[in-house]
Every structure is written in structure tokens, then in C-alpha cells.
Image (cartoon, rainbow, N blue to C red):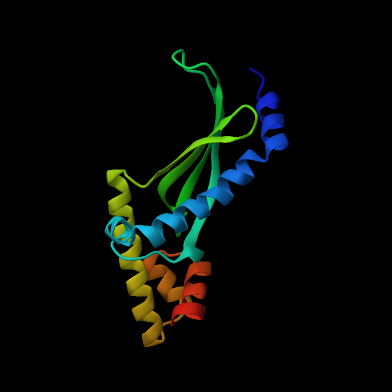
Length: 155
């Protein structure tokens, strides 16, 4: 299949844009309605400002046990530039949402989130001690834009 047909379908139905918007609705609903699961998953809470999304894939799928093909739009979820999960929406060909999938379940995720949270704690402590932002970057390897945001909002 020609990729341009998929990209034209995406443009017509704003599928990738809707996938990103729907991620935030799904994430916030999960966070607010399942606080225990949310806190267990992330070993506490996440700062929404540190979450970023990146387009991952768009693909057509037809299973022989169904009557209809679907289009999947998939995005990667990052926390301070560490990949922590994926979010996918399954669309019917008419653009309606069939299902969605939020996944933070990998074993590597837990290691990454622990590392990021440790680095954030270190950065907050360093900010309280008055260390220079460039020194905090070297110590924690957190990109400067996040350290500046941390200083502005949470110090």
C-alpha cells in the first residue's frame, strides 16, 4: 500500500492529532480515577509538564477473523526525554474510534522511572542548595529546559 494513502486518511480524519489529544484525556482520567494504580505505576506522581509525546506509527490492520480493517495510530510517551510508554488508538476507516491502549507496562519502564525520579529529587535538592543550573545538568543529566522549569515551578 502506498504510504500517501495512509497519510491522506490521517489528514482527513486528524487521527494523529486526535490520538495525542485523546492520550491526555485518557491519562488524566486514569490518574484521577485510579490514584492507587497511578501512584504504584509511577512510584508517586509525574509532572505533566515533563511529559512529551512523539508520533510513532500509523498502520492499516486487517485481521481475518473480523469484517473490517482498522487504522492504528501510535505515539511514544516520554518523561524528561526517557521513553516510558506508548498510546495507541484503533480507528475504523470512517474515522470513529474503535478502541485505545495505554501501556506503561514494560520492565524497563520501572527502571527508567526510578532513575528519572531520583534525578528529579537530586535536582530539587541541588536547586535548594543554590547550585548553578549547568552543574545540576552535569550531575543529573536532566536537560536544562526541565531544570529551568523545575526551578520556576517547584522550588
